[in-house]
Structure formats: C-alpha cells, structure tokens
Image (tube, rainbow, N blue to C red; front, side, top):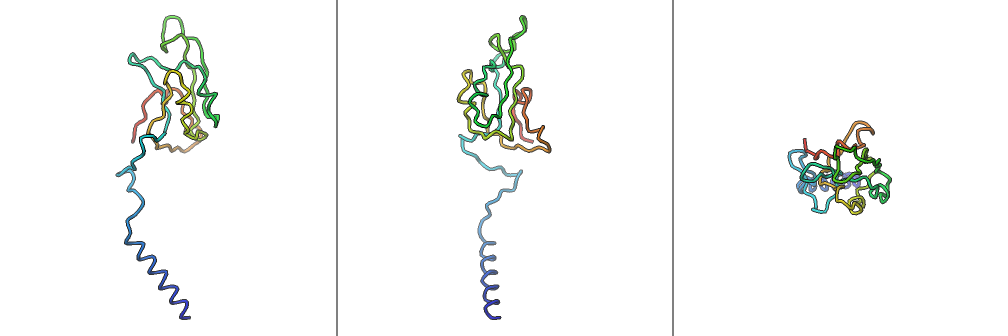
Length: 145
C-alpha cells in the first residue's frame, strides 16, 4: 500500500513540475508560428507585369513530380487573345494538395519560373475535391483568413 502512495506522489510531482514549464503550443490563430525562409507551402502560378500567365504548359513540373500530384493540359492560344507570353498556355492546371509532398521539384524544373511554392501553410478542407487546386485558384494569391 505504501508503494502505491509513493508512486502516486511521484506522478503528481512530475505533473506539477510540468505545469510550471513553458508551453510548446501557440494560441492559434492569434499568434502564428514563424517558419524558415525556405519553407514550401501551397503552390501558385505567377503572372508577368502585364498580367499574362508565365506558364506555357510544357509539362516539366508534371514530369518531375515524384507524387504525381500535378496535371497539366496545354493548348495553343487563340489567335487574337494572348493568354500567355507565347502561343502556348496551360488550359488546365491542377495540383492535388493531398498527394503533394511539397518537395519543390516542380518549382526547380519550371523553365519560366511560373510555378512557385508560397509560405502559405493553412491547408484544410471538408472534402477531397476541395484539396485539388485548379488553375483559377493557383493564379490568385493565397490569403490568410
């Protein structure tokens, strides 16, 4: 019986000592964690100063992705409407954010510097379909709510 009381007192001592130590958690969303400058978060597709898409639909990002999380469908631009700075552009560009491992290989492989990984890390959704970022979403800059 005495051994049980000793063990209980030792456990309570450990608990009380841990209560006095600083906490490892953050009061999210009031205070956000600081990340390294090299942190890789959600993807974005960049535009040039004139508002044209930099992505030419070459498919290199899709080819180097080890998780097969990127899908690119390219086409020739309509004659009188320049979408990209060349005659080719990505008609459809999707990133499956559940499959993506955020390795940054797509960013490194892009010859036009169109694919960029932002420091935005708040990725949450209620369904799998909401975690597939389409071209329109990737062209808009990510914002914090």
